[in-house]
Structure formats: structure tokens, C-alpha cells
Image 1 (tube, rainbow, N blue to C red):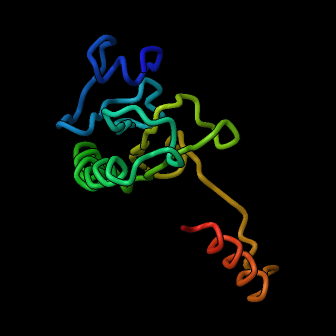
Image 2 (cartoon, rainbow, N blue to C red):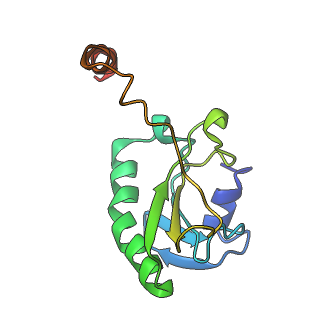
Length: 140
């Protein structure tokens, strides 16, 4: 896609701090560096988000994540790594080319937070089953 910033990076039209490349995947440092070593992993083939991604493109992309995440973690002695993918504006997707964030973690106050509510106390097994059924109906 000609106006996609990640396609331009993959094609070499915009410089990047590349950490990995093969025939299917390109990984480079995120300019924001939320934490030191924050890396983006993208399929070379343009795809807008996870919903529109061909299964083989997804397979190729996710197959590289363990190797890249391990390298990021080991390079900086991180305590852990978050693997994050945002889809749609409501989920804070800002570049509409599928990408995976590899965020090394260094403990509290490292610049990245990920927290959600635990509703397990107020959710019944019946509600869980009803929710599961709605999802299963949509899986083809």
C-alpha cells in the first residue's frame, strides 16, 4: 500500500533500526521506545489488522515472535516481555498495518502499564457459557 508508513519502512523508503528480516517478516525498533528495546514485528505483505489477515500471513508472522522476543529479552536482561497487538482505533491501533509490539519489561515504573479489571468474582459459570456460545457461533 503506497501510503502506509510500515510498507515504506519494509520497502526501505523510510529508514528504520532493523533488528530482523526474512522473506515474510520485518522487525524494527519502535521510535517511541516505551521501554528500551521496544520492537515492532510486521508482515511484509500489507494487511490492515488481524481480522483481514490471511492465515498463512499470520502463521508466518507469529512463528517469528518467539525468536525475536527472546533476542529482545536477552539483549537487555529484561525481566519479561509483553507481546501486544492492537486492532481498530478503540484498541489504540494507530498504524493500520498489522504489527506486533514486543515490549521488554524491567519492573514497575519502566514506562509501560497493562492492567485490567478482574471480574471473576461477579461472573457466573452460566454467563461464561453464554458468552462462549456467542463466540463459538461466529467461528467458521
